[in-house]
Image: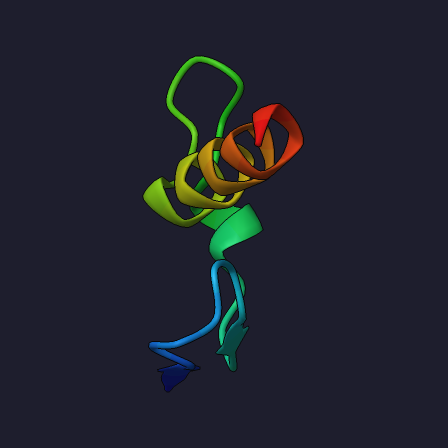
Length: 44
């Protein structure tokens, strides 16, 4: 189960463990999105 707030730049709540499917050479898309949003916010 996942929820997100459409009017918030990076709020996501998840009830699963994507870190178990993530590897350094193949990160889970959730982590890629979180890092991308953080970098955009930092540059703004």
